Length: 338
Ligand SMILES: NC(=O)c1ccc[n+]([C@@H]2O[C@H](COP(=O)([O-])OP(=O)(O)OC[C@H]3O[C@@H](n4cnc5c(N)ncnc54)[C@H](OP(=O)(O)O)[C@@H]3O)[C@@H](O)[C@H]2O)c1
Ligand SMILES: [Zn+2]
Image (cartoon, rainbow, N blue to C red):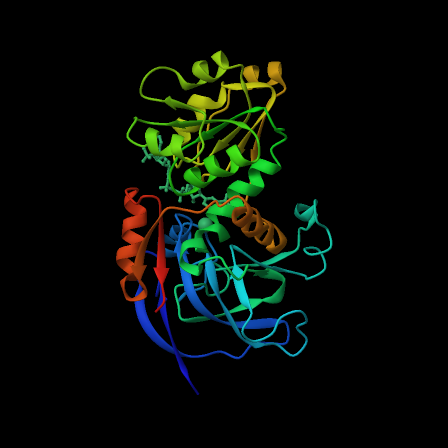
């Protein structure tokens, strides 16, 4: 039987380990993927550090996967060997609630797998994916350049279009890292008055060139006040990894505004008086399902949206992960398999 290579986490908190495995056979509803590229996301730390209970080790992280179908399970329809495929964090559902409920995909509570958490992910040459998690990738999107669209992209694209904001509304993107620099591009192309909010000014010029109409430096004054001076935000997309940073902008929401919380933080205090007087809300959001990924890829192609990446060879997965965790990557780290 032929072999594959994986960079697995042997146990929570351990370094990635290069291992050789047998290439698995797809079960009836699965696809075997030969991976071309996989993005490295801050959420991979859940697997690497073991931040949530129940992860079974060894486990291969990675949920921004682009590759080619190598083999299809016996009951799979709509896919054949050679098709380009993308897989994000959503690793599959019962199979009845993703493709047919467009517009209300989050009604599905029957998510059965999270790529790289409950099943092995994309830090590997091959992986299995449930067909309900599979997104078609347009033929002319570069696999290495586009891999981050499968998590950083779909998460921000989807959160923005479900935030309640409409074209012309003021939308703030809090944090312009891996997710935020894509969020700025999506927000501007979705027609929002887009304001980027980040500490310092070193990214300002670049972020404006990606489409931000305004920029707030959180180290120079109160960012909530600055947003209120602009009329109050209809939506704030909070991509920062700091609860304090989220709290400092929450008061910048306008009436009926919504903060879409994307960054995984704990201990985020909320001023309920301010919120009830504005009828504002705080809403958590995870990325999306396969159809959301396909729509993110299509929208990105149409509007020429792409992440800015640092590309690492597959063998340097640990260095790639460390670079991502340093917070210094500009902006997304991607593993290239060959
Ligand atoms: N909800 C979902 O489905 C989903 C999907 C993917 C990722 N995530 C989560 O989203 C978050 C962002 O991921 P990412 O890959 O974009 O991370 P990232 O590239 O490291 O960006 C983090 C951003 O947060 C800012 N930041 C960090 N610490 C801060 C502090 N103390 N005060 C103010 N700003 C601070 C950084 O500012 P500087 O530029 O100044 O460093 C940067 O703009 C992570 O928590 C990740 O797990 C969630
Ligand atoms: Zn992710």
